Length: 234
Image (tube, rainbow, N blue to C red; front, side):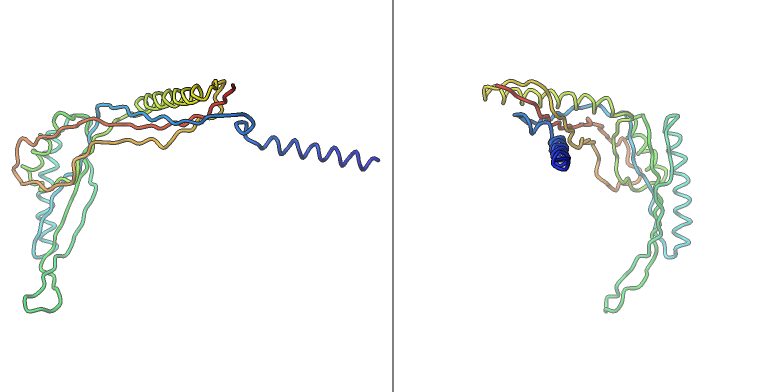
């Protein structure tokens, strides 16, 4: 008799444990809906890479020429940038150049190309074109991309999430109403991976001495997706 009682208690405990593992939304009728929102904002920071590429018969000659032009470029950039701007080296390379003989045969080294690139980060978006021009006039001959950023994108992300959540809740309520149901409570909320679309200029080579380079920052777009699961009743 005692064994039967213990077996019954064990069965009840097991059943309770299994029930506790079942998600709450599985015990009630529910509706799931997603909402998507995009919020635009003006960027307040710019980052770009600008550099010097030089070619010579020997690596030493190419490096010496590059060092001279890069030093002049950095000095010009710092003069044109506002206080607080950042300038640091982002890349340096020495690459052999090859030429294939006209009569065939293996390619041979014909010279060397040295590239020194610095990254600039600044809050002065209005004068990006002037900064590029200053660098070009001082010896830079390539720009590897301009990226516009937000120093703090948290408020914009929050606005996008709020709008996406409202749209998801509204869609869930609309579907429930169409089925003759009423939303009673929210069972779950899931955030999709937020997407930040930043305006960016493609990598480009620029002629030395170019002036009045036009640069438009555009807008940054932050996209958010929220999925809500709501309990419904007749």
